[in-house]
Length: 336
Image 1 (cartoon, rainbow, N blue to C red):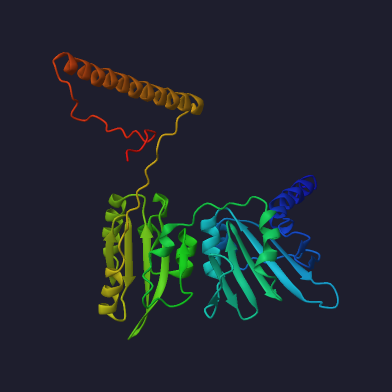
Image 2 (image 1 turned 45 degrees about the vertical axis):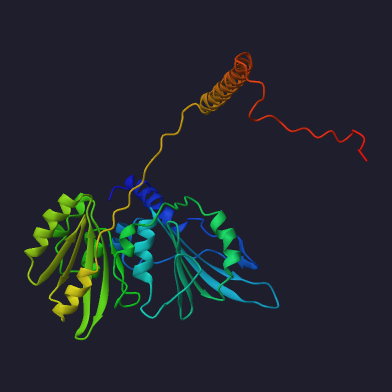
């Protein structure tokens, strides 16, 4: 290699590795815990993490002051968006993990917690800080993305679902890792497809079910035909969703699970907001004054009409008004 290229290659390597090795994600203090020097994180499956959209990582040890001397290790992965964080959270979640109320995506492990927040995934081991103390961490997260999670994650029927077996698929690499029986060409990720995979308990063993979401129902219809060409495939299409399982150990259980997968349409109506709010308020005030003017005119007309009718009635000879008022003279002296 030419000597002149060595500095350029070294600089390029530094620029490529800097986002992963030197990302400042954690604050100097979480609750009473003080941050130690950051550590390097090894990525176990670079291709998979790249597909999830890994942008930066950081690991550090936090220690509480004396006399507690409690400590915990904190690891963070920043992804491109919350969908990638969901995929990484499900991939790292242990089978025996228990649900945790820490965040919407959180589990307790044998030595700590794993949870997702926006486009971040965190793993704490040791003396995990209280949920309230983590707000300082959330408030200073760089490039935080809190866009909604994909609705597909909730489409797997919960009945019979093996805990922590869900895996979110966003490309060919994750498909190969978690459901290698499906060719990427059939999944058609180039159309924008994503999938949620889960395992179901049956009387004859575990059964893997995948739900693919396509941009339109017509695309889903086309891909359902491609899935049906695969050996042992049991396929159901509902709206833009295609549910599939292969050679299920219990065909009847497979039919029952697929029957519970149904696409729910959510409609959102966007109302037009006036561009000029001042003009809109002025129009409202003018309408109020116009309505008040109309009411005053109606009252005047009604009063004139009523008074004119009484005058006309007297001129026509009516002496006693049918609705004359009875007056009591309370000041007059009493008769004995």
